[in-house]
Length: 481
Ligand SMILES: Cc1cc2nc3c(=O)[nH]c(=O)nc-3n(C[C@H](O)[C@H](O)[C@H](O)COP(=O)(O)OP(=O)(O)OC[C@H]3O[C@@H](n4cnc5c(N)ncnc54)[C@H](O)[C@@H]3O)c2cc1C
Image 1 (tube, protein in one colour):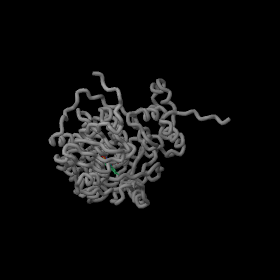
Image 2 (cartoon, rainbow, N blue to C red):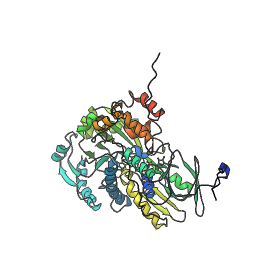
Image 3 (cartoon, rainbow, N blue to C red):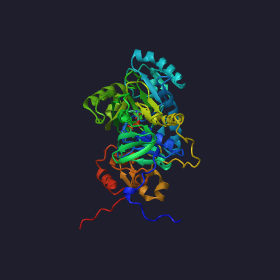
Image 4 (tube, helix red, strand yellow):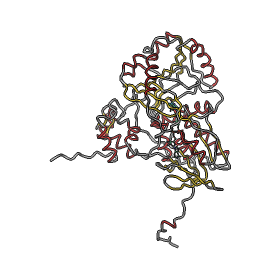
């Protein structure tokens, strides 16, 4: 019998089969989980409330690939940061996520901090990291001559590295989509009805049905948890403000300069960035407003004061930008990852200061928990596509504008659109042609570095806006008659 050619009227359409898993939250953690589960035969969706992936905390951090040397030994965080360091480092090589193995130097500025250094080295060993070495003040200044006066001693952490957080998020989301994960952007989960076998998520764009739900909603994880009927934790947005200094400052920071950590967190650091700048920050301030990603006068003054002590020469350089990110702090000093088998629901909460590094390990951990909870099949599919090769945004690598062979092959890579960051029309075009294209200027910036330089879009902003409007296609301007 031939199939019925009459299309079924919309209102009689059968509801689509439920997903096996819906992951809520398109930050690094959610994208890593969706990518990981997308490597199985399961039908998976990644749902993000904003217009783009990587537009929450994952876009505004200090972008350090942490060894986990200073984590609290025995915590889930310490295990997953150490594992994530290896997983992401290896994944970065395969996908082209820029990483620079700069190493870090932790500097003691008081007797008390100097006395704490051997304990930090022992803590690192307990975390399985044996490479730290105590150094005296002379060695501290030999390594970072621009440090302010008064450094007493240091601890080296050779494995600490800098990485591109934007490319990390995009690589994971792009890989997830390549593996068949359905990405729903601009889709905020607002309610849920948990049935016997299927949960219906009520979203800003209609209902989504799924067998299992993974909550990786970052700053919104407690609210989504409440939507699913729980009352177990509250997220406190902890703001971290940072200054970005011009590229001329880069020789001042040959490695990451860390403070001795305190109970308030990792403290203010000076770090080179993967784009060739130097960063000073972050602050640490608990807020009530989960949208308060603006910078403040108090934060500005605090960072100036810190900068004056840490590296006075840095303050002679120009500040290119300042920004702030919100850590999803909760009232415990560890990740809160919890599986509710009866509800077929897994919470990934409290991924506060280390989620960029730990994301892929969190994903691995989540898969193991889901397997214990009875979700199947979770074996890797044999036909997995190769991971994507991401655009090269790192200052240390070869960028398209300086790649003669690429330009000869495709002249668009020789057509510079943003002169501060030397972003070409070819890269803008590629961003719009990619599996997860940008929706706005900020998304294009995260994919290309466009408008990220010292003029912050003053010169290229109008052109960039026109390119967003046209989907990355250069339109010849009409000549006035
Ligand atoms: C100042 C600062 C410095 C940091 N430095 C580092 C560092 O150097 N190294 C490191 O490893 N980590 C660092 N971190 C931590 C790291 O950035 C975070 O742990 C990580 O980005 C968290 O990722 P996430 O996916 O959990 O959250 P997010 O990136 O915030 O993603 C969560 C997503 O969920 C979405 N969402 C929320 N509610 C809903 C809903 N109801 N429906 C649909 N979508 C929803 C949000 O829109 C958001 O996009 C830092 C953080 C800050 C703030």
